[in-house]
Image (cartoon, rainbow, N blue to C red; front, top):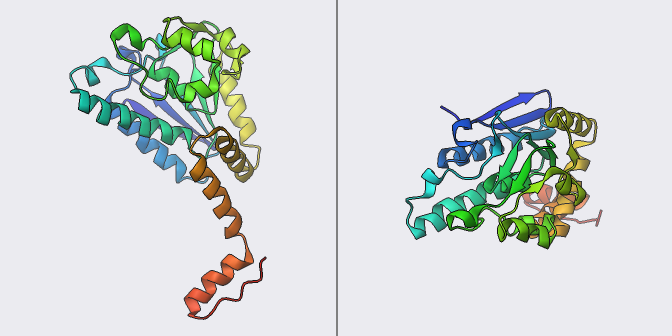
Length: 255
């Protein structure tokens, strides 16, 4: 039975975690399912925005299910669990569509890292964020010390990762990590998604790529993608393709 659901409503896609007995913690299968949904979204040109949600629980996502990694060897833990999770989270962060995390409850560890991989976050007033890994003898492994370091002030990140403190919604809002604190975060996210659907999909995609390139999120690939998109619209590209197919010397115009 799937614990990561995928639905499309109009032009908005939703990926929903469904593991409430474990506070929506990730298992290996859930990582695989999540990644598969991301591929479907990327290939669907009709989707304009993506919501990342969770079924009702005490947590949006409590991180990683300890039963999924507790018995792994050091090599397996590093190579399979950490790096496998990183690949999925990086795929989410680099999705061409805008993404919104709906934090109706607490986001701890991998749950916070999941939210950080989205473009925007909406949070319920009583929800908190935390990096509790040191309490069980590990460290954040799915970009908690890397991507979050670009999104949060260093002292706040250290409060969570080193001092084990939770950060409330209002503080997260004050530093810009959260776009909005709302009693009904899903309704607020729906409103944001509806606005995205009114905008130019191509302009939104390119703007996201430019911002990511500036902050170092897969900068090399972003720069080459933008450059390739520009050259694809040129007369020279059409001439190059045409001359190749016609087995003749190209006559480039520079346009």
